[in-house]
Amino acid sequence: MKEKIEAALNKIRPALIADGGNVELVEVDDKGVVKVRLTGACGGCPMSQMTLKMGIERILKKEVPEVKDVIAV
Image 1 (cartoon, rainbow, N blue to C red):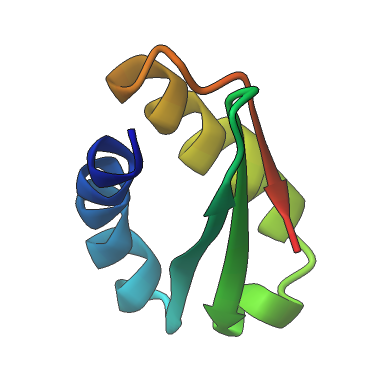
Image 2: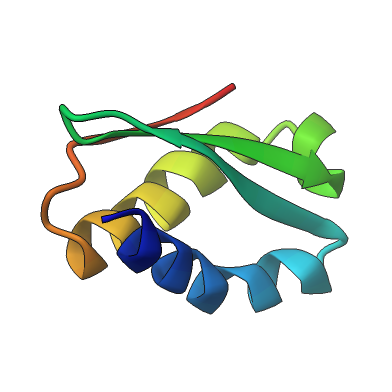
């Protein structure tokens, strides 16, 4: 599952990088919870929670149905 998540994150990364940020996969647990770290401009952006839930989580759940939740650490 980790490989599928990395592949999905690679689809998201160009948009984040264009805005000066990035996303890093930290951990995937056996319950489908994905932990990511937003870096660069995304790390301190006031819109980062919206990016996380409406962007990253939505795409990960679509690409990898086993994903149940995405949280930033």
